[in-house]
Amino acid sequence: MKPENKWMDAEAAEGEEGPPQRRVFKKEAAEAMGHMEKLFTDQRQLVMARYPSLAADHLAQSANAERTGYLYKQGGLDRRRWQKRWFVLVDDFLFYYSSSSSATPKGIVRLDRLRAKPARPHDDPEREHAFSLPAQKKLYVLAASYLEERDEWLEAINRASFFVTGLSS
Image (cartoon, rainbow, N blue to C red):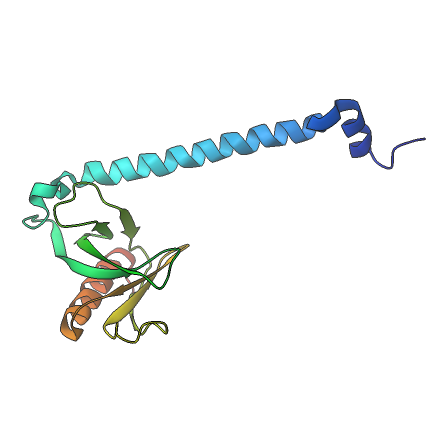
């Protein structure tokens, strides 16, 4: 009996691993993922090299920082949790840390083509001074303690984005 297609024939000949084309594809996919991982690591190292003044001792005094301060960040997987984070805005990057004394950022948001907007999270009406920052593949929801503080962060972030992208208000 003849197999229905060339894949079935190749799978029968190759056993569990499948046809040679599938092995080649898996190898190429693994190489591509490794390359993407290296690019991400290289970009993060480049950012950190570009801003060495963001070491813990210099965060508060950094001459490069447009704005620094604590904000509440809505949790990634658990959107009901809010975590207090130290934020530092430098040029077109928003860095966030566990605390003002942390040396390594927990995350970096590139502000290129981003626009921060006031927001009110549906699940937590107490966070009335919240704003959203839609990044490429993630929506950041942040909250300030006071309305004036939120507005200052919105203005600083959007000014940084304007500087980079030329967007108008």
